[in-house]
Image 1 (spheres, protein in one colour):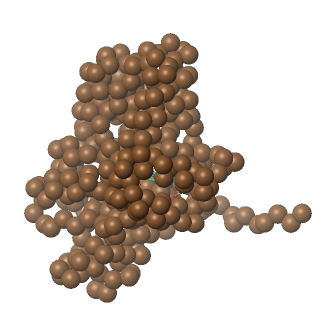
Image 2 (image 1 turned 90 degrees about the vertical axis):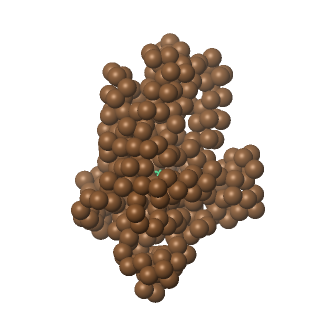
Length: 316
Ligand SMILES: CC1=C(CCC(=O)O)c2cc3nc(cc4[nH]c(cc5[nH]c(cc1n2)c(C)c5CCC(=O)O)c(CCC(=O)O)c4C)C(CCC(=O)O)=C3C
Ligand SMILES: [Fe+2]
């Protein structure tokens, strides 16, 4: 299992954030703002514990050892790969805890897997499993949790799906033909909406980062709540379709920020759980492992700026 990683002690928050944004052009003010979100939760991101729980759940249903390593914090993927090599593992399925195509949700995982296996002598071959945004197991888990949230605020609540915003340049370059990030999230949202019998839904974005002059996917979830309220919507179910566990982006950006916005607007709001350790999500991973080895993405897939001529700098 290859995941994002997160800090578990206050003193680890800033070094973790610096790992995440290295070379990504995120302004320092944004970083310090996000640091405060983490410190507000005692410096502990829930993501690592959620990974441990998913590993335990998976160990109960598969008959091979399960290892876990992260891209941005301990346990680092390279250390995990080193342990696997020491244990004599030669070949492994890599399940990344991200369902869609894009640089952030796919290519960066591929790059980090390649770096970790290159760094370790006699590393096992890691084969990344395919994307699962439309897998019936993922959809069933999300639909189940969406039912639960609808039961809290009423079956006629507006369904609002949310995912991590990304720069428009990243969204455009996602997947082999481009535009896959949004298209996959929309497809997943439509499947969940259909499963709970909703005729209509919205897909909006959260957790925007980066410099303000760079365009990212919009609308933002909080702006969208304001718009819905103006139009007379009284109850909303937020479905974090772009994430697989209730980590910090969910706990802060939805359960803290969006919940406060809904309060301010006098709107009823419930947030559907993420896939987490839902039994259908866990069995999905086992099913993916049993599929024929996926064909690797083309080398330019999800690479920002790929497929277009290189930009020549302007010469006044
Ligand atoms: C598409 C996507 C996913 C979903 C796919 C997947 O799950 O992988 C995701 C997940 C996550 N993002 C997370 C945390 C962060 N993401 C950041 C920054 C960024 N994310 C981006 C995109 C995504 N991110 C982008 C385009 C940036 C800008 C910098 C860059 O271009 O790379 C920053 C920097 C500070 C900030 O600016 O927000 C942090 C701390 C955590 C961990 C939460 C926890 O600790 O519990 C998780 C699971
Ligand atoms: Fe890809």
